[in-house]
Every structure is written in C-alpha cells, then in structure tokens.
Image 1 (cartoon, rainbow, N blue to C red):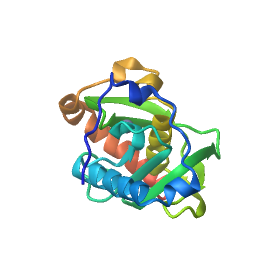
Image 2: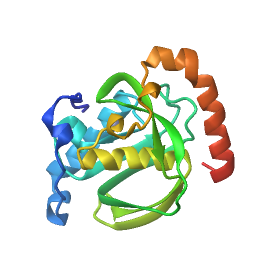
Image 3: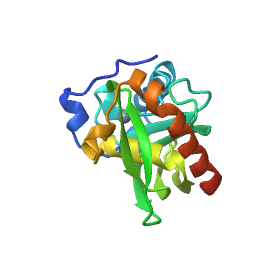
Image 4: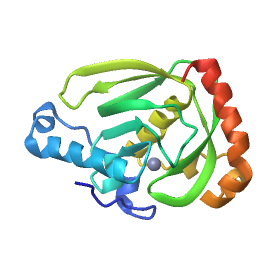
Length: 190
Ligand code: ZN
C-alpha cells in the first residue's frame, strides 16, 4: 500500500533517522513498512525513496530504476532495499547530477556526486551486504543516504542558478544532460 509522501517544510525531512535493530527489522510490521515504501516509490515513479519521506525517520531506503518516466535517461537498476546503510567514496572525482526529489515537487538542480562509491549495510532480511556502485546510480544512492541525515538536494546545490522547474528542465537542459549522462554511462558502465 502506497504511503503519503511528505514535502519540504515537514520537519521529519530534517530529522536524522534512527538505526533499525535486527529484532525490529524482522517484525511483520517492519517488513510491511518496507513493502509499503517500495509501493510508494513505484507509484510515484521515484528512482529511490527514503523512510524519512513517508514521515518515518528510520535508516531505510529503496533504490530501483526501471522504465522510469521521471528519469528516462537513467540506467536501469534492480530493486535494492538498504537498512542502516553507509557510503564510502572510492574516488576524488565528482560529476554533475541534475537531481529531483519526490518531496520537493517541480524543482531540479545540479548536485556534485562521487561516481564511485561503496555501500554497506543490511538488506531487508538483516543480511550484511556490501557492494560498489559506479556512475549515475551512485548519485541516486548518495541522494537517498542524505535523506537519512536530514539533508535535501537543494542544500548541496552549489550553483543555485541551476535550480529550475520540471518544464524548464525538459525544455532547456534535458537534451544536454542526456548527453552528459550517456558519457558517464560510457565511462563507468552504469
Ligand atoms: Zn529525495
């Protein structure tokens, strides 16, 4: 069942989310919550969603990219649920990522993200997971990780002249950004 997504201005988006204990993670309630978070992400066509965005400040997020109309240029990425995640940057490089957020309707802007990261944490069944992510999808994970620390993408937009509405993005910037994305995908394979 999809949940309501809260929007910028709601205080839970600014909360530092709390870790989920293994006992808590294994409860039916928490498993149902994770299913609901996935449904919410899919219904809203997000590339990812963090628990803070449904007003529940727990350290959980979901990433999945498949035929996404909001981000048609993003490489596909299978459904991944992360619990108590952390991210380590694996390089000094940064790329420009034009981001949007389900909690900030109709706004996009350029955020600098690391193209090579290591993600560690638990999956939904409390198994330890560790994997590397490269390219555009690394930006999606960093965006979701920020949510767990109460950080929203506009906080990280260095050049505020890149802030734009969805329709201005489509009209003026999407074509150039698609090319930029395809260069990143060529370079990093995703
Ligand atoms: Zn977001």
